[in-house]
Length: 428
Image (cartoon, rainbow, N blue to C red):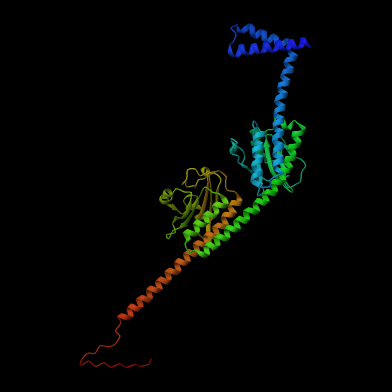
């Protein structure tokens, strides 16, 4: 026993000697003999070297497993305490970022029968991933399989599958809800220690099931909350339309209501001018006022002009890829424009912009359509009031003109000496 301890001590001393010699040149000796000596030592002490290497590797693996287990335990406990959609989503993203630090991954959540990539500020190169995944063939079916290899065909669209494999993404993890797959995690799982250990793998699968159910329920709850806020804001807009005849004030209120629901970065309402050829800014938020004053948009020009001309909705996920986008804000990345329609007539356009690409979803389009209808009603009412007031003003002017004319007429025949006047009336 003492002999083994002595040999191990000598071996460690020689290792330190060689390390300091090669790394820092501490000892003034020729390099070749030292390297040869180091090689001989490794040959003599093969078993201790292998044992030491195994202990070092096991220690690293143990630390990695211990860290992964702690992250998963914390995430599991947190999922037991919250049901809010945003909080659950953020907790999952943060945990994935810690678990898969050295592995490419992306997380997708189901919205309107399409899986949308969830942006995460702490993750680099997120835009390189496909932004949307279509409804999977097995998506509506209950399944006990939680993990798929992307090497297998038919799991997802072939083009998307090829793109993932080119990005070295090889595994798909499902997060099932009650009736649908609520979310997907794509990952390069090679070398992930948590999938090599039965305890961490079982805990991860437990989180997959729990998070899928919570995300599905939380999404429904969040959707109900959003709808309630929309209804509340629409009631307030209706009250504003009934109580105010100032279109500018009403449109400003509509944009403020949209800000609380959609959180855009810039918004504007453009109306057709009296010539029917140009668009004028009627209300705005987030745009440089100088830029708007200098802006002269014609119908058909830019995204807003195209919407007025065509009467169709225009959603730009990336304004840099659009041919008819007219830049006002250099930081704008995505834009949504909806026509203001009343009885089939286009009165103008309401436009929202975001500094994030692909910010506006189909749910945003539906919300903006509701408020665009209210804005069109407010504009139509204001126009009708203007017409009514103009008509009343004209009638008043005509009444005044008639009174003036009557005052100018001869009220009685003047008396003139030696002038005789006779009047006769013959019925026709």
